[in-house]
Length: 258
Image 1 (tube, rainbow, N blue to C red):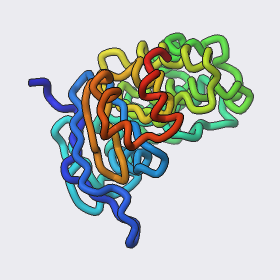
Image 2 (cartoon, helix red, strand yellow):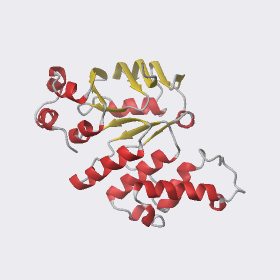
Image 3 (cartoon, rainbow, N blue to C red):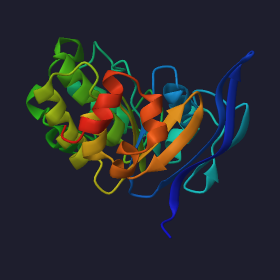
Protein backbone atom coordinates (compact mmCIF):
# COMPACT_ATOMS: atom_id res chain seq x y z
CA UNK A 1 0.00 0.00 0.00
CA UNK A 2 1.40 3.41 -1.01
CA UNK A 3 2.17 5.74 1.89
CA UNK A 4 -0.01 8.84 2.15
CA UNK A 5 1.55 12.25 1.56
CA UNK A 6 -1.58 14.11 2.64
CA UNK A 7 -4.57 13.09 4.76
CA UNK A 8 -7.65 15.02 5.83
CA UNK A 9 -9.68 13.19 8.46
CA UNK A 10 -13.22 14.36 9.26
CA UNK A 11 -12.23 18.00 8.72
CA UNK A 12 -14.82 20.71 9.40
CA UNK A 13 -14.57 24.46 8.85
CA UNK A 14 -17.22 26.99 9.82
CA UNK A 15 -17.27 30.77 9.60
CA UNK A 16 -19.80 31.78 12.21
CA UNK A 17 -22.96 29.84 11.37
CA UNK A 18 -21.81 29.10 7.82
CA UNK A 19 -20.52 25.53 7.50
CA UNK A 20 -18.16 25.50 4.52
CA UNK A 21 -16.33 22.18 5.01
CA UNK A 22 -18.38 19.37 6.50
CA UNK A 23 -16.63 16.15 7.47
CA UNK A 24 -14.11 16.15 4.64
CA UNK A 25 -12.02 12.99 4.25
CA UNK A 26 -9.25 12.88 1.67
CA UNK A 27 -6.09 10.83 1.17
CA UNK A 28 -3.44 11.58 -1.43
CA UNK A 29 -0.67 9.05 -2.01
CA UNK A 30 2.97 10.05 -2.31
CA UNK A 31 3.88 10.84 -5.90
CA UNK A 32 0.23 11.03 -6.98
CA UNK A 33 -1.31 13.78 -9.12
CA UNK A 34 -4.68 14.37 -7.50
CA UNK A 35 -7.31 16.83 -8.72
CA UNK A 36 -10.11 18.34 -6.65
CA UNK A 37 -13.09 19.47 -8.69
CA UNK A 38 -16.53 20.75 -7.84
CA UNK A 39 -19.08 23.47 -8.57
CA UNK A 40 -18.45 27.08 -7.58
CA UNK A 41 -18.85 27.50 -3.83
CA UNK A 42 -18.10 23.84 -3.11
CA UNK A 43 -15.27 24.75 -0.71
CA UNK A 44 -12.24 23.97 -2.88
CA UNK A 45 -10.21 27.08 -2.03
CA UNK A 46 -11.19 26.77 1.64
CA UNK A 47 -9.86 23.21 1.54
CA UNK A 48 -6.54 24.48 0.15
CA UNK A 49 -6.42 27.21 2.79
CA UNK A 50 -6.89 24.62 5.53
CA UNK A 51 -4.18 22.35 4.17
CA UNK A 52 -1.67 25.17 3.67
CA UNK A 53 -2.21 26.80 7.06
CA UNK A 54 -4.06 29.97 6.05
CA UNK A 55 -7.13 28.74 7.94
CA UNK A 56 -7.38 26.72 11.13
CA UNK A 57 -9.86 23.81 10.96
CA UNK A 58 -12.85 23.99 13.28
CA UNK A 59 -12.32 20.28 13.95
CA UNK A 60 -10.65 17.26 12.39
CA UNK A 61 -7.07 16.34 11.51
CA UNK A 62 -4.75 17.25 8.65
CA UNK A 63 -1.59 15.17 8.22
CA UNK A 64 1.36 16.01 5.95
CA UNK A 65 3.69 13.04 5.52
CA UNK A 66 2.24 11.65 8.74
CA UNK A 67 2.76 14.84 10.76
CA UNK A 68 -0.13 16.84 12.17
CA UNK A 69 -0.31 20.26 10.49
CA UNK A 70 -3.92 21.28 11.10
CA UNK A 71 -3.86 24.70 12.74
CA UNK A 72 -0.13 25.31 12.20
CA UNK A 73 0.77 28.67 10.62
CA UNK A 74 1.48 28.66 6.90
CA UNK A 75 5.24 29.16 7.24
CA UNK A 76 5.53 26.05 9.44
CA UNK A 77 3.48 23.97 7.00
CA UNK A 78 5.76 25.17 4.21
CA UNK A 79 8.88 24.20 6.15
CA UNK A 80 7.43 20.72 6.64
CA UNK A 81 7.36 20.24 2.87
CA UNK A 82 4.28 21.86 1.32
CA UNK A 83 4.08 24.72 -1.15
CA UNK A 84 1.09 26.27 -2.91
CA UNK A 85 -0.01 28.73 -5.55
CA UNK A 86 -3.13 30.91 -5.53
CA UNK A 87 -6.06 31.63 -7.86
CA UNK A 88 -4.87 35.22 -8.26
CA UNK A 89 -1.19 35.60 -9.13
CA UNK A 90 0.75 36.15 -5.93
CA UNK A 91 4.09 37.54 -7.07
CA UNK A 92 6.32 40.52 -6.22
CA UNK A 93 5.38 42.80 -9.10
CA UNK A 94 8.23 45.31 -8.60
CA UNK A 95 10.93 42.65 -8.45
CA UNK A 96 12.50 40.96 -11.45
CA UNK A 97 11.62 37.39 -12.38
CA UNK A 98 14.98 36.22 -11.02
CA UNK A 99 14.48 38.05 -7.71
CA UNK A 100 11.02 36.50 -7.28
CA UNK A 101 12.36 32.98 -7.68
CA UNK A 102 15.39 33.73 -5.51
CA UNK A 103 13.12 34.87 -2.66
CA UNK A 104 11.22 31.61 -2.80
CA UNK A 105 14.49 29.67 -2.55
CA UNK A 106 15.99 31.42 0.47
CA UNK A 107 14.81 29.17 3.31
CA UNK A 108 15.38 25.89 1.48
CA UNK A 109 18.93 27.01 0.70
CA UNK A 110 19.66 27.80 4.35
CA UNK A 111 19.34 31.58 4.12
CA UNK A 112 17.39 32.78 7.14
CA UNK A 113 16.80 36.46 7.81
CA UNK A 114 20.09 38.31 8.29
CA UNK A 115 20.29 41.96 7.26
CA UNK A 116 24.08 41.88 6.92
CA UNK A 117 24.14 38.99 4.42
CA UNK A 118 24.19 39.70 0.67
CA UNK A 119 22.28 36.77 -0.81
CA UNK A 120 23.25 37.97 -4.28
CA UNK A 121 26.80 36.78 -3.59
CA UNK A 122 25.74 33.16 -2.99
CA UNK A 123 26.85 31.15 -6.01
CA UNK A 124 24.73 28.15 -4.98
CA UNK A 125 21.62 30.31 -4.71
CA UNK A 126 22.26 31.93 -8.09
CA UNK A 127 22.77 28.55 -9.75
CA UNK A 128 19.59 27.09 -8.26
CA UNK A 129 17.63 30.19 -9.32
CA UNK A 130 18.90 29.82 -12.89
CA UNK A 131 18.07 26.10 -12.85
CA UNK A 132 14.46 26.80 -11.84
CA UNK A 133 14.09 29.49 -14.50
CA UNK A 134 15.50 27.17 -17.16
CA UNK A 135 13.08 24.45 -16.08
CA UNK A 136 10.01 26.66 -16.56
CA UNK A 137 11.24 28.48 -19.67
CA UNK A 138 11.69 31.94 -18.13
CA UNK A 139 15.49 32.20 -18.16
CA UNK A 140 15.41 34.71 -21.05
CA UNK A 141 13.14 36.96 -18.93
CA UNK A 142 15.17 36.68 -15.73
CA UNK A 143 15.82 40.42 -15.51
CA UNK A 144 12.31 41.50 -16.52
CA UNK A 145 10.17 43.12 -13.81
CA UNK A 146 7.40 40.67 -12.96
CA UNK A 147 4.75 43.35 -13.52
CA UNK A 148 5.72 43.53 -17.22
CA UNK A 149 5.21 39.82 -17.90
CA UNK A 150 2.20 38.59 -19.84
CA UNK A 151 -0.58 37.03 -17.79
CA UNK A 152 0.47 33.52 -18.82
CA UNK A 153 4.10 34.21 -17.90
CA UNK A 154 3.03 35.59 -14.51
CA UNK A 155 1.20 32.30 -13.86
CA UNK A 156 4.31 30.43 -14.99
CA UNK A 157 6.41 32.51 -12.60
CA UNK A 158 4.08 31.62 -9.75
CA UNK A 159 4.44 27.92 -10.60
CA UNK A 160 8.22 28.43 -10.62
CA UNK A 161 8.08 30.03 -7.17
CA UNK A 162 5.85 27.21 -5.90
CA UNK A 163 8.21 24.44 -7.00
CA UNK A 164 11.45 26.31 -6.24
CA UNK A 165 11.73 25.41 -2.57
CA UNK A 166 11.88 21.64 -3.18
CA UNK A 167 8.62 20.95 -1.31
CA UNK A 168 7.42 17.34 -1.49
CA UNK A 169 3.75 18.32 -1.81
CA UNK A 170 2.62 20.97 -4.31
CA UNK A 171 -0.82 22.61 -4.27
CA UNK A 172 -1.85 24.48 -7.43
CA UNK A 173 -5.06 26.52 -7.28
CA UNK A 174 -6.52 26.94 -10.80
CA UNK A 175 -3.14 27.34 -12.49
CA UNK A 176 -4.60 27.64 -16.02
CA UNK A 177 -7.44 30.07 -15.21
CA UNK A 178 -7.71 32.80 -17.84
CA UNK A 179 -5.32 31.14 -20.29
CA UNK A 180 -5.89 30.52 -23.98
CA UNK A 181 -5.98 26.96 -25.30
CA UNK A 182 -2.34 27.06 -26.43
CA UNK A 183 -1.23 28.63 -23.14
CA UNK A 184 -3.13 25.95 -21.24
CA UNK A 185 -1.46 23.17 -23.23
CA UNK A 186 1.95 24.66 -22.43
CA UNK A 187 1.05 25.05 -18.73
CA UNK A 188 -0.09 21.43 -18.43
CA UNK A 189 3.20 20.16 -19.86
CA UNK A 190 5.10 22.52 -17.57
CA UNK A 191 3.18 21.28 -14.51
CA UNK A 192 3.70 17.66 -15.53
CA UNK A 193 7.46 18.17 -15.92
CA UNK A 194 7.97 20.46 -12.93
CA UNK A 195 6.12 18.20 -10.46
CA UNK A 196 7.64 14.92 -11.62
CA UNK A 197 8.46 12.80 -8.57
CA UNK A 198 6.43 15.06 -6.28
CA UNK A 199 2.88 14.89 -4.93
CA UNK A 200 0.55 17.27 -6.74
CA UNK A 201 -2.89 18.40 -5.61
CA UNK A 202 -4.63 20.65 -8.09
CA UNK A 203 -7.90 22.58 -8.07
CA UNK A 204 -8.98 23.23 -11.64
CA UNK A 205 -12.19 24.06 -13.53
CA UNK A 206 -10.91 23.05 -16.97
CA UNK A 207 -11.99 19.42 -17.27
CA UNK A 208 -9.57 18.83 -20.13
CA UNK A 209 -6.71 19.75 -17.80
CA UNK A 210 -8.11 17.61 -15.00
CA UNK A 211 -8.67 14.46 -17.08
CA UNK A 212 -5.38 14.89 -18.91
CA UNK A 213 -3.23 15.42 -15.83
CA UNK A 214 -4.70 13.69 -12.76
CA UNK A 215 -4.08 10.12 -11.63
CA UNK A 216 -7.14 10.38 -9.38
CA UNK A 217 -9.92 12.91 -8.92
CA UNK A 218 -11.99 13.87 -5.88
CA UNK A 219 -15.30 15.67 -6.29
CA UNK A 220 -16.16 18.22 -3.62
CA UNK A 221 -19.78 19.37 -3.27
CA UNK A 222 -21.06 21.55 -0.42
CA UNK A 223 -17.97 20.84 1.66
CA UNK A 224 -18.01 17.06 1.29
CA UNK A 225 -16.21 14.62 -0.99
CA UNK A 226 -18.93 12.73 -2.88
CA UNK A 227 -16.62 10.60 -5.06
CA UNK A 228 -12.95 9.75 -5.53
CA UNK A 229 -11.52 7.63 -8.31
CA UNK A 230 -9.58 7.40 -11.53
CA UNK A 231 -10.60 9.81 -14.32
CA UNK A 232 -12.63 7.20 -16.19
CA UNK A 233 -14.49 6.27 -13.00
CA UNK A 234 -15.32 9.90 -12.21
CA UNK A 235 -16.42 10.61 -15.78
CA UNK A 236 -19.08 7.93 -15.59
CA UNK A 237 -20.21 8.41 -11.98
CA UNK A 238 -23.92 9.40 -11.89
CA UNK A 239 -23.46 11.27 -8.58
CA UNK A 240 -20.77 13.41 -10.15
CA UNK A 241 -22.83 14.11 -13.27
CA UNK A 242 -25.78 15.19 -11.15
CA UNK A 243 -23.51 17.70 -9.36
CA UNK A 244 -22.57 19.29 -12.69
CA UNK A 245 -25.33 20.84 -14.72
CA UNK A 246 -25.31 22.23 -18.27
CA UNK A 247 -21.91 22.86 -19.78
CA UNK A 248 -20.00 21.36 -16.86
CA UNK A 249 -21.87 18.06 -17.19
CA UNK A 250 -21.00 18.01 -20.88
CA UNK A 251 -17.37 18.75 -20.02
CA UNK A 252 -17.25 15.65 -17.81
CA UNK A 253 -18.24 13.58 -20.85
CA UNK A 254 -15.96 15.31 -23.33
CA UNK A 255 -12.98 16.11 -21.12
CA UNK A 256 -9.82 14.28 -22.00
CA UNK A 257 -7.24 16.32 -23.82
CA UNK A 258 -5.94 19.55 -22.38
